[in-house]
Length: 275
Length: 295
Image (cartoon, rainbow over all chains, first blue to last red; front, side, top):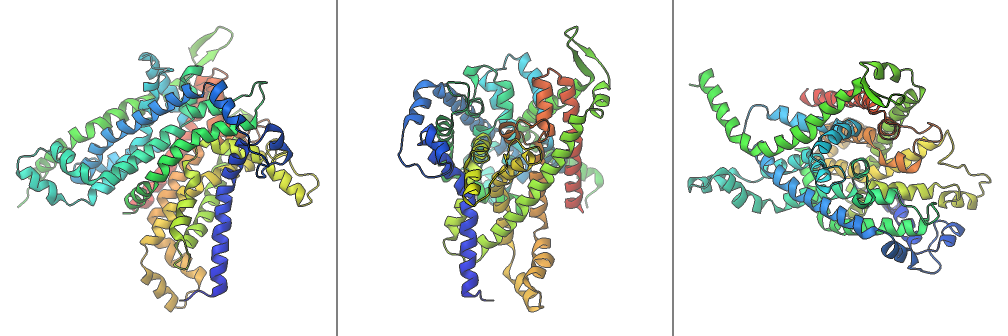
């Protein structure tokens, strides 16, 4: 089957149009972040005529941006670390052992996705309260880790399945324990899988809003998404210029990491979910 | 020869081996997932009385109130429309986009595929803020419409008939990359021979899509539809930032209404009742999925 010349042109036009629809809203954000407030509403959506850095200055100098940035960085990176430590052994167990209840375990993982946020947050609120973790970062870290768990375990199981068992069996004959075999042999071979898990849990934690909104109740404990949602200009009204600058500053760090990590995430997700 | 007893003993060995590896996950799942779930559910039998400022046991009262509450019924209907429409739009557009991205006649395929993923990296709150600006009465969309000669463009976020649909547009945009990438992976795993065989049998493009491509991607499609249905139903960010459920309760969804009750009106029990309804709906989605997969 060959595709005619006109159809090929049409294909490219259609793809470019769809991608414009996916990218244009982000361009608007970019434009607004360097426009003055009056220009934002004088020519909405258009490229800026003159570039101003005042919006960025306002966010970085006058607001508590760096407090929230620190909170988000701590929560996201702790979540990544904890997620990898917790899910790597579980993925290994699902991949290597034929234990009873492994189907039930997988189903349970799927079911956790269906648990409504409101119920979880009401229950977690009680739990965190007991341990004095309301408004505290560790409380949010354990929550985000539990959300990252199901996908991360599936991802890693899929990855470990592809590593031949012979490798670790040779090591085990030499007197290596299972755990040592996992750490010394399997994990170094699974770096792309671990990067997929890291990218996934980083995005999840950095972007998570609902639980952070409910559990982080003091201004100083807000993570970046909560700060953005509560963003107010000086007069109590939304100022789109500074808000766009802030939104961009929130997005850029994780976006850069995403650019590096996306191919691992994509191959991990698609490889694990299809087979 | 394997006796049943020997078989049982062998598999117990497997369980003993697996347990230490599963322990950290099981601990997280029990303490951060199962226990809070049960704890949250039990809240439904209590109500806060503003008059006495006390939380008292009220049995099933919260459930009974639920079905007399017009806002809840509105939110239930909205949530169904919101979920079904968003997932349908996402699936349809993603299917078209993935098919195009899979074409061997497309140049710069790698670049286009990476570009598709961009919205995936954006925080939900940022996505919501962008779309809120786009849909403002004096925002870029209406400016463009005015440029096209539309005399009185609608106010998307404050029109009772439009607010929910506006939110659906933003949500579909955000979900598109994940669905596209999963479907694309499904298409890539298909063997070319299947399609060519269908072509030789005289199937036209549409027939071969419906009869051959869709059925052989059943597994991917099922998991994507299930996950996206659950995530969209539970989604909170977009409606919260775009309309806060307004105007009135025109774009109210169940998660937002549950949040407002629990954390703005101090009715945690009522919020829990709404949460239980969400849980029942979503667990039935999961059960449907599992039955389809095990069939």
